[in-house]
Image (cartoon, rainbow, N blue to C red; front, top):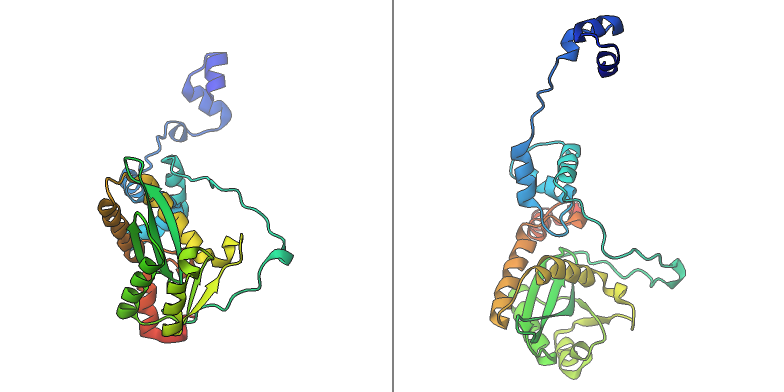
Length: 270
């Protein structure tokens, strides 16, 4: 149509008549909703490691019922699409360890590990992370400058007093976990320590994935003035992780929701 008007110098009405196009179609102006309110909600929900599927779950919680494809389109228009930072490495099936026994109930198996970061003045600190393998719930994130085996025992004793004793705990071969203090505690409480093979962090994949989320969503996004400030921010992130953050492995539920569902329905959700 534009070519006829510019090249042959004809009016829009005559160009429509020559091409058989109705003038109402030519002059129609689309009135599509700009979706500004929905785009604002998507921007408000966007965080590190939050893809459009997780944002779609959060919108449904707020009562915003919208198609997942529309969320994906607006998510991309806002420039929020994420790209994987770490390359996926293909591992030969012959090199994989035999599948470990899966936890069948909350508190059946825990996993623990250490992460490290630094304060605003460059001083290093560490954080002990412990999670429930079945519910993916973060049980504790304990920060300190120098954490040893006795600190691990103290945190475990506090958790056992609150939640009961697990049957197994997955951990690596670090001196904090393989030393005499933790070994005596495990023997006294009849807990089996499942150590990862040297150089095989995938043997404890649950806590490795959790620590990756912790680093991307908390450690890399905050400055810490002291270990007390770090502990406060870690506790706030842990509360959000357990109570608000949808988990793909839990069918979009949070760890607290999944645990409550299991308590109400028992093994029917397995």
